[in-house]
Length: 399
Image: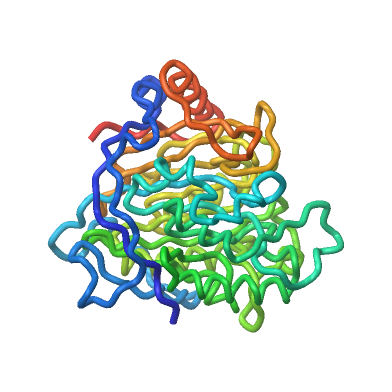
């Protein structure tokens, strides 16, 4: 059974969610470093040496497809879970100008560290294979591979969980997958440590959540991929099976929904990071909407995604906070539609998401996000709020 990464200390970031008729994201954009920053990651430790605010937690196995129904969002036993802050960032890889930054992985994403490390737990999409083995897929125009230091770069910047359930996780075939899984195992016990979800040695492994204890509140994070074409053959997307490694593919969502229900029974907060949608589209596809609704019914508190390489709308759906597209975050190409980015930070307390904020940035020529302030931040936050107009989402209500 895998062991989760070192656990972040609990903290509060009081934030606001942009809304139609309630301009709360635009009203108070947050500059990097403004929120409370968690203490430095000290790596895994035994219960006898870990500070009282953190404790190691095993990575839970994925359940069989037959799973008990979702339990209430309320913690089944007192005391009530303490509020936690969860931060989410979009697509990251280390191609082009970004590759040289891995020569010093501890500072590779240093400009983004204040925004990424301010929350109790931070999740991002790592859009690349890891290692130095295998051959690039012959039928793909773009294939990405980065050395294992890419995981250390993410961890050093404050990312606690990386999902690799995407269309580049197996760009270098079976040999590349073996390298990736070995690097992920090492990263879970590294210093600083990071969990990898959405990819594994078989279906159970790929759909297993990372579990983190944050000040007594258990957070489960799952990763999965929903390819653009809902009728596609899962074998064309390197889907993990009962007997072979790959990514957690949710063309048939039953396995993912079962994993969410199972996590709901053991965790106070459940977050799902999806690789989904149509590249270049600002509005969610029908498959995104359908799966978001199903995940809300299964008990997910937060559903976020990427893959469109541009921002998509965010808000609430049946009590679940959904952010359809977080765009790129550290990426080697930019354009007027793909350079806007940011960090989404939500507060959850075991009954759902109670608050949210968007910290806007633009990806520069070096491939890194440059966080903005003042009138520029207000404009970008307003633009992000306006993306909700073509979704099925509503603004987060006041509590």
